Image (tube, rainbow, N blue to C red; front, side, top):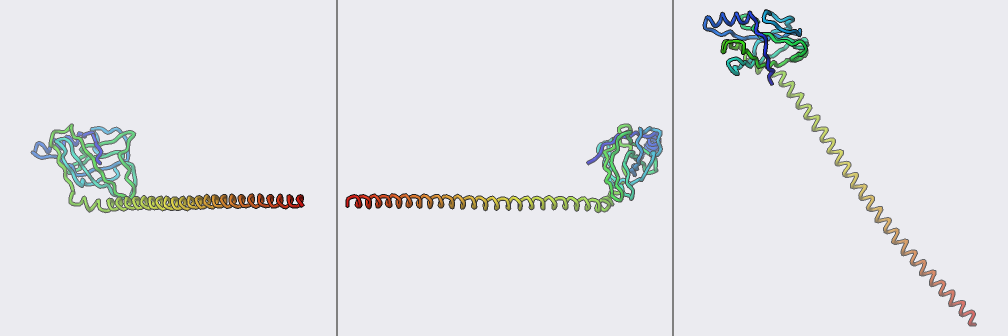
Length: 228
């Protein structure tokens, strides 16, 4: 994704463009510089307040006569907040500068390449007065390592997600099995209780029948005794 920039065009940059157009040429943008100081830029600037590093344009595209798309790769061993950006011409002239008192564009981490992608509005300049000098041939090789690292991190995250899903599925399976076992156990307990209840009923009926028969027998014996 690109960040839209509306930088301040410097007086030195305008002078360089005027000189180029008088000879029938276009001024050539070749580098992007990053700095770490936040401020309100002015047209009188010829340098950044605190330039950390300067990088060649990796690729460029004219989106319109006054809108350019620029990409570059910022490498280096130190980390810093990107708070000022300078757009430099091929002859070293600072064409445009961007900065903001309270906002940073990005953070350049130590030993990690940062892909810079900007849509640069040059509406204050004559149409088609600026072209781009780029090193597009080396862009893919330059980006290979950071893109590979990002892809590796993404794959690792996807693997962790799949492993978590597998664990959840296993837990759900175990819970389902446990639920089925508990359900079966309860069913067997109900069957056993029902069987025990039926057995008690049979025994109780037999006991009552035996008692009734015994009482009838005793009554018969007593009648026989009294009759004698």
